[in-house]
Image 1: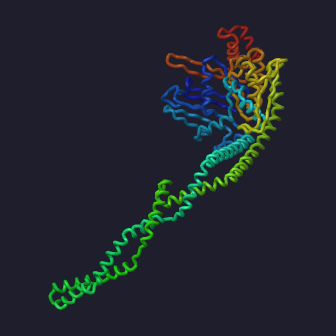
Image 2: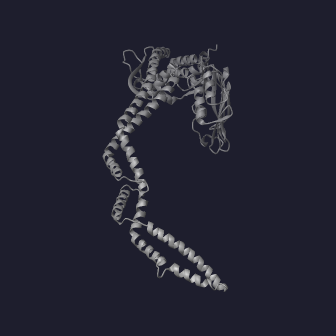
Length: 551
């Protein structure tokens, strides 16, 4: 339950601290006094987005802090799941800095806003006036049934399986679309593959062919030059080697002269080098060979390779081979598409069956829950002054999986006898919706084990005896959870165990919203004012005492 609330520097609130007790409490005050401001502050603890516009003093940070007393083991387990320190007295805090930075804390541990929201939503439920509109939404009506059926865990399991099935279904659909597109391209891709396959491409062959082409093109000239050099070295009559050797021998006779000796030494080295060159030239000339008849076939092959490279935007033969492999994979995939489609179809079917199995369990539990919800709502509506009301929940089931299962739920209502049941959103008036919403909110809060529920003028559109009966229902709810209601109706305020008043103080410099707990005398005065207005009459005082059961 909510033990205390502290609000600092928020909107018209300078500093406010308030303590609550278990059971039924009411908050009253004139329109514009600041009741909605308190709810706005609590909404920050529920994860609502915040900015610097909420700061009363823009140079100081805003703080909203609530202390909850926790008894639920479910919440204790949630803290463990979120890796948070658990304490029976848990403090939730939100701070907004003047720079607009928002920070959240649970038991003084910094947490993400999403974590704050997860924890606060299981501790506190705030029902605001605009939420009456939710009553017309199918998702809300479904959530009421699921809350009573306690389907939360089963819904989580179903959601996982549903998303898995949707994923498999999308994969299958994508495959079919791509398969249809690929089939249209199949013939062309098969032609391209066959063209590259028939070319019998060899890795690195282009470089070898270009080298051989160069050899053939220059072969005759190289052969002629080599032969001329070889002849010049080995010619019997005028051999370069023999002449140099002869010169060396003649100079050997005069090596006593130092310069002659040096020249002779150099000639000796030249003769050795030239002899080696002559040997290499002779050997290379003997081995050097080329087939002039291959010129045409090489040029033809290179022309084919270059044509294929240009056609397939490939720089080398190796790139063409990569392209061929890709085409082969594509063709193989098309040839095996029936097998692949069958595999995906089976996978999708299995995922569907798993999700459908859980959806059937949800459906059964919902049908069982509806059998209990309908009499509960009817009984409560009768106690709220609608003795002739008719209420039923229509559930239709099909084989189509939705995010909620295989069911569609529609709440039907009639306020009077002899009037056919119609969809709730079409026939219920504002006051009727308020009473129905009170019934359903009770189911929701109990189903989700919320410890505190705050009603923000849920009594809109009702008055008199009906308001008194609504107060009885709230008091009944308060026997197993904390109920705090913001109300303008004296009948409801009087039934509460504790009553708080929100009021505004204005000075020449500022306006401040505050809240106090009312004692017995103050409650009599406040409720009398709610009955008769600012001019409190003796009759209003007497009526207030009667409502408060004060003699």
